[in-house]
Amino acid sequence: MTTTLFSSGLRKTLAGLVLGLAAVAAAPVAHADDALYDSFGGEAGLARVVDDFIANLTSDPRTRPYFAKTSIKRFRAKLNEHFCAELGGPCTYTGSSMAAVHKNLQIDRAAFNAVVENLQDAMDKNGVGFGAQNALLARLAPLHRQIETR
Image: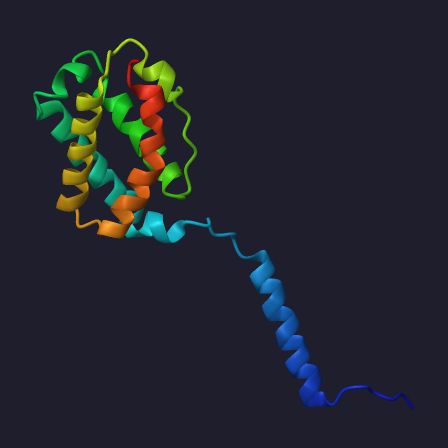
């Protein structure tokens, strides 16, 4: 005769708890900032923001000259990667450093600020909330040291 430590009901409860914990452990790990990435609408929403941002940049006389020799197709792909990574999405930025990309463009503070305005307009157009906009801008702002020509 064997003695059981737990009643049948308690064993089922413990078994359910163990299975539940195993399922949680096996679940994909979410990025810490998925909420921020999701506030941009995920992949599709971010792509719309990037498309509108590029349209703004290439039509604005303050920024258009900087994109005259740019492959817009490559720029779009790398910008999507960069923003996705900055927003905590499931992406890795594979482009060149900001310093290398902007090295010979002679970008001053006025041009940098025009780019920021164009990005804000694109985010507004796509319904990105004020807090989410500020979160992205706060992550991008330190890049001015690598982008602006001194």
